[in-house]
Length: 257
Image (cartoon, rainbow, N blue to C red):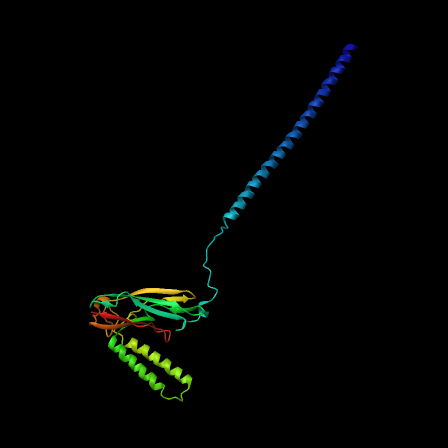
């Protein structure tokens, strides 16, 4: 009897051990599957995150921001800026020495001084702000002729002020044209580059120009060394602006010895 009971207990234990082993096996398989799924999900998340970062980097690199500097435009268009008149600008002409030997050179200084109330434009190139050199004798004759015209225009005391002002303007323009047309040397015989200036309160512009005691009259635009020299005598230098009526400097005497 004991032998049979012991055998049954042993078989029961064997049967229970097999069942447990199967249960443990199933649990291990389940846990393994869960771990594999979790690991796969983790790998997927890492790969997706990496691709997302790469895509964002590509997006930013494909849209580079270019920073450029632009000049601040003048709030007042050039087309609306008025042209300077004779009351806005004072022309000055000076030289360190008024005596120069025949065949020598003399350096003159031109100055544009602003005296107006509102900003204005003026060209300071040699093409329009013309430095003209005249023989002193011709200059005196032209001035005398201009004075005769002026007096003749004022003989009629019944003339209106408007007519008088018009006559005076014509006389001034005639003097300017005579001074330029009778010049022995002019700075505008050859084409040059314009020099526009925007002048405002406190502005002044200065430039140097050299006269090599030669003549352009009757010669035109040729090399400076090919121009004929002037004779000994007294000459009158003056700046005359062709674009601004009535704008000119005071005369400067130059003695060629």
